[in-house]
Image 1 (tube, rainbow over the protein chains, first blue to last red):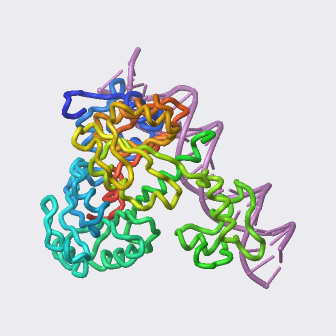
Image 2 (cartoon, each protein chain N blue to C red):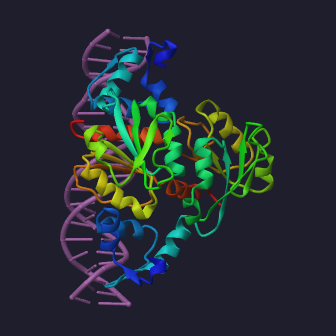
Image 3 (cartoon, rainbow over the protein chains, first blue to last red):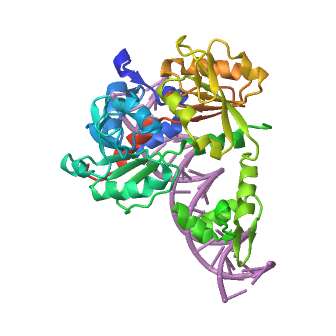
Length: 184
Length: 184
DNA sequence: CAGTGTGAACAGTTTCACAGCA
DNA sequence: TGCTGTGAAACTGTTCACACTG
């Protein structure tokens, strides 16, 4: 909306837009302060700026991708990351045929040498390797100073408490679907 | 574990494996009945069977993919679906260059004709089209009798209440990460 | 006076502690 | 004896109603 010249939006409109109720919008915002105008609503540009600041999306985050298979390749191409100011600044694979190739604007490095992560201060790792290699990859990433991991492998991975892991198991999400479909 | 000859497993072991506590495992299971053996644990094969039945994963589910771009192609290749007895039985795109091509073992059909869904009784749709086409695709899928939708586009989509939508917005999941990373 | 911000009521979830059973 | 299954307690999250303000 920011680009479309809309000045302000009410909690009700926001709520309708994403399918929740207005209270939840207001309550949630209130935990982080107050950025609305009584009788009017929320000023779009300001709200957007505040939320970005809260989520720490007001600076560009460099991420490193490990595993340039089907999932990894799709991620490299995915335009959605830019929207939240993410930059896949490095990619690694263990396949010698892939190492050295350039996809998008990163050159694929060898997974056995993740040291550049430390030098380039990359704090986010994306795991897109086969499941049996997931834990090992996580360990290596942590060793190189990564603080957050986005895990695309269908495996629970163990890391020190300080490290945040978000796991996306697409197949498992799909598997939730039939439960909610009456009589199928 | 089922294939590895492990006979039984306790709630504690299960809990450790996925990073929760044993109470939660037991309480959650108890809502669906009791399938454990006191003093022993849960019989692996039986537990697996029970859970599959609860989640309705004991029958093969046919799914139709709409949008064979980067994300869609990756999904067609993704081996994880088979694990939960899913079968991407059809794929559609609007690009004439792609229509007719065969990926894996499905021939890409034209998105303007989704009628085969109805004939083939496909009840699950996967949306992997650009965001501006997401709602329209959802409407068409619903019209063809789909009961559940897995939405990969970064858009909230509106459907009749009876239809279950699960949205996977990879970029948004990644965007959650910096919030949990102290001082980055 | 429309729409935010919030204390209080309510609802749902998690934890605990232990009875009961293989 | 060891581990499940479950009421009750503690906690967390959601909804409500309304005081307040631009």
